[in-house]
Length: 227
Image (cartoon, rainbow, N blue to C red; front, side):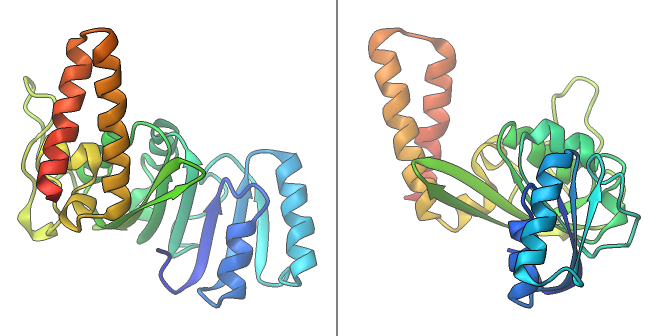
């Protein structure tokens, strides 16, 4: 999902495996590996030296994007965090960088709203499964535009956005499960939905909860859309 770039900023780099892979594969000419914790950053530096790419990867001890200047990277990568934490990191910085590859672990529907509400385009989404866990990865571009549609004071969210952006995020279900994933009939999303359907149906055999019935209805609707 990472486009070829001059500099990639790997935020929350942990042991810098992503930065090393990007440089070794020629996807990024150089990388800035950032982490808020001293321990992981020391391991990152050891791994970078072991890979022989210390001239191409710089490590920085910083909180989120605080140690990266606007325009210093052309692709920002943030993965493995909750959506709310990622929103906190990106809030006020989205226009500083043109490309993002983002993989939130929690609050994903809210995070999709955050991106689109702030003038970004979700160019693509992929879903992967590993060890029974599902992960969503988003390829995002900043359009350097203001909020496209201001929410009505009495509404939770605007339901339609500027059609120039050509992204399939207009219905609640698009934000819940990913407009691109639904449109592409992504097989991994299908597997996730099948598991969610079974889980909700099992819960309803034991207790009748309105919230669970509502969640199941969205899952069934998504499965119908995917055919």
